[in-house]
Image (cartoon, rainbow, N blue to C red; front, side, top):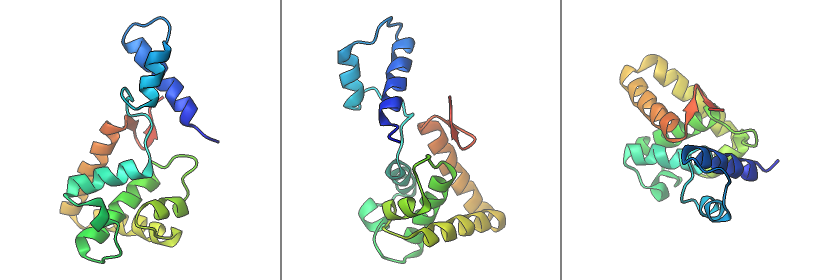
Length: 149
């Protein structure tokens, strides 16, 4: 099921309510579709990935490469773990892996386990992970791993 039209309509409705418009206008709808007034309710694996990379100060091209430098591996694992936590109905582990460095589903499953273990054993890492998680919750208007209704 393609949820994009529903998200766009809901965003249009929210925008009109926030700005006291009684009837949505086609101009506003066109601007919404072009991304000018999106409120953050629609997000993709790439959006989460880019937020993680930006927080860690990494370029997407390098972080998504096959390089196994610790900083790149960790960034990909954090992004995969957050995507698994905030996953949309049409996101499978295979899909998440393909979007983050062209990896397979077992890599995503491994990343989720590794990040959980790091958070349990490394207090500094847990703080960094929680900062990134909170940033994504705020940016995409999420609450406890789910989209606000």
